[in-house]
Image (cartoon, rainbow, N blue to C red; front, side, top):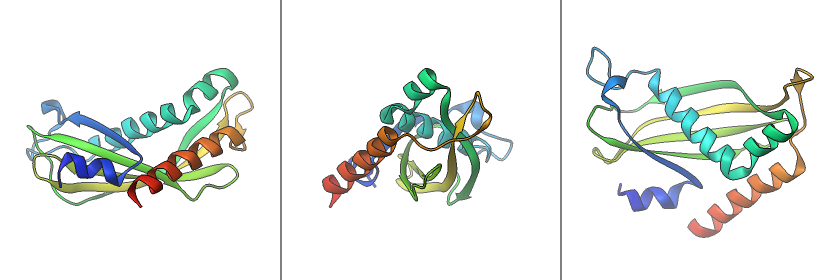
Length: 150
């Protein structure tokens, strides 16, 4: 799959190189590194949605409740990867993020997963309702994506 095709599949994309130091003794990217790839894409998405600005202003923002990863093919250095992410299952205090990691060199999916994100009030130390403007930003991002690919 070409890099252009990636752009048509996901509302948020992150491109980055595979780092030599992320490889393990089996000469492929260590399984724990994929969770960093997910985190990098998650934060890019949060920045595009204004979530990080909201967190800075109000001390209310996302906290990761759970995450999982399914490995599809080994990834090695040198290579570049594209991580795509999208959000669904938006509820009052939480939503699900989906992640897919593609190898540009191999032209294939190497991992996919999902994470449950809960909105959290860091001062009160309890979950919080997702602010309406954040929900609208999520819906707009998803709708723009669906319109551009539909």
